[in-house]
Image 1 (cartoon, rainbow, N blue to C red):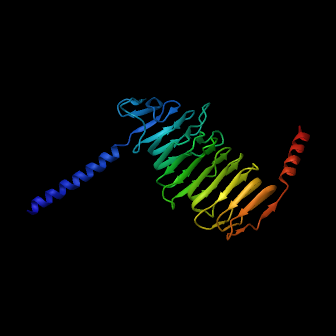
Image 2 (cartoon, helix red, strand yellow; image 1 turned 45 degrees about the vertical axis):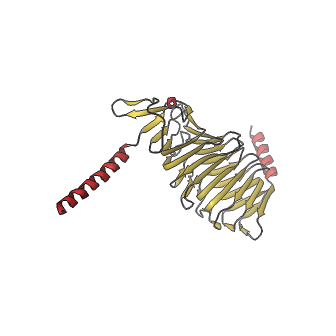
Image 3 (spheres, helix red, strand yellow; image 1 turned 90 degrees about the vertical axis):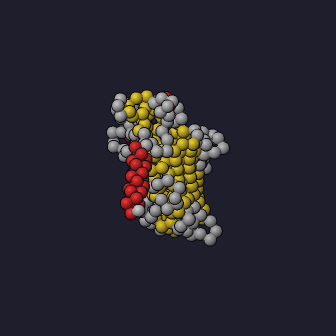
Amino acid sequence: MKKWNSMFRLCVVALVVAGFAAAASAETRYRSRQSGDWADPGTWQVFDAEHGWRASTKDDGVPGPSDWTEIQPGHSVLVSGRTQIETLVINRSSGDLGPGMLEIVSGGWITIRRQLKMPQRPRESQAGRIVFSGAGAQPGVLESRAPLAIGGDVIVSGAAGGEIRTRNPAHLLSFGRFSNVQVTEGPLTVSGSVSMDGTVELDGPTELRVQGRNLRDGSSGTWYVKNSRARLTIATDEPVALRAGTIRLARGTLDVAVDMKTDGSVIRGSEARINVDPGRTFEAPQLIDVDESRSTNLQAIKRERQQ
């Protein structure tokens, strides 16, 4: 009986190991072949152990939940439905080719199961891009099951706007120092445990809403509100205590819906407003009021004199 029990245990272990091996080998590697829709096999190449990279066929399909894929320089891949991917690489520019671009249209939804890679920007190249476009009723969504790092540019150019979020509120959603978030149309919502070390520009009649668990106190980025109808809203679950960074309100509004203190600089133009929800506090020892329109005119005059 002991002998049969031992054999049974060995069989179970062998099946478990085989299962893990099969799961590990299930990952398929894709890369973009040309610009196109994510759901179109013609957009992709697939790696074949025997023949190397080749055009994806209908049988090969498109990148899925357990796969690795790369958007190559100069290519734009469109997400209009729902998709999942294990690892996604959005490459920087190379030679005469621009950066790789992931475009998420209104109602499009992509879930990153493991990792998003956006190689950092050397001086001689452009970082990869994530673009939210479209004017439908639903925003585009970029969601991650793991901590999410944005190393490149985010552009919101469609009225539907976009959402960037981690599924677990405690996971870090970080924007690296090379990232540039530009919102010209449509709202953008970011949520998780948010760290901003890059640059945010609100250059249209739009809103950037920061929610989720918290805004990390080590964030050293610049939040620049440039349009009179633009709105930056801080509405996290936990109080905000920023030790660094700059909030520059040339125009527009900063809405504070949580107790917030910042030791960084807050520069407020004559056309800017800071609204604090009832019962909440906002402390900014380095609150600097400037005539933004006058300073802009002076800069223009200086440029004219130099020409």
